Length: 328
Length: 35
Image 1 (cartoon, one colour):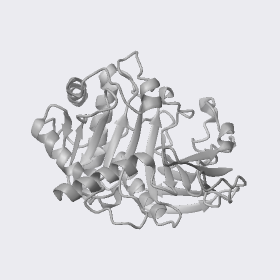
Image 2 (spheres, chains in turn cyan, brown; image 1 turned 90 degrees about the vertical axis):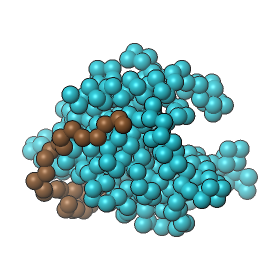
Image 3 (tube, chains in turn yellow, cyan; image 1 turned 60 degrees about the vertical axis):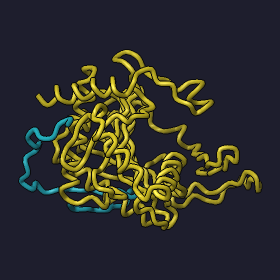
Image 4 (cartoon, one colour; image 1 turned 180 degrees about the vertical axis):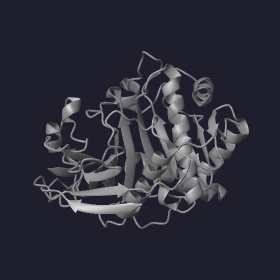
């Protein structure tokens, strides 16, 4: 059952997918459903003995293309809608123990190609207004399968956070006739203290207003609305920058750092987002130290106001040092 | 990039992406930096 219910107090949709309660939960490595199917072995999600990169429809989808009309009709105040959309799993490698940070640039570059292809294909579907590419990594984030993989949601609406960001970008564009993200990037370059890594076509930095101690964003230097709009050199450079930042994250505390990685880009709702949507990747590691995690509690959950116990200038310096150390 | 689409027994699609070795170095030499 995939169903949307409208929250008129926050003006946002909440998605219900009750079948997800039964999803696979920490299977032993020898029964990983994301590994290739070995001859004579149990059938996994991938009916081949090896693979490069694989995408498939999630068995426990948050959104489904054929979701029926909800049996709960709702009201004018609190309408409901079918949870129609796309829920995909992206397998980065057939190596169960691999991580994105440990992969070579060429494989990450191939993954960029797949992400771009999925953005285009999913975004072309009539019911999809926003293609959201993301990865949850590590048990601290709630990951239930360790095999290296990410996910893609094709939402039937523009979700609240990207929507808020786009509205801010639209207001900024109207007031200043410039892209909000380009201006933020220029400010970060001019200041320099929060820059973590700069390559030819992308910049990784801890934003001035980071909500998590080691949050980092990777911005395309060119104002390009989506991953599909990146040219060949930019795709190669994105792979390189991702690798550098991820190696830095792993060097930061000396272990494979959990994180949430998300991509923000233009909605596929048929509107014009040129000059407002600016492709970027955001990372949210939950660790505030090697041993301590940042939990979203009263202020963050109930008030939506983040309290952060480290300044971005301090954490950026530590992360920059880790990135440099990982390169040596 | 080659893209091969199949349908699983339960009707879900699965797409296999395969890539040719383009002769690029696996990792680029150190370039870029913080400033």
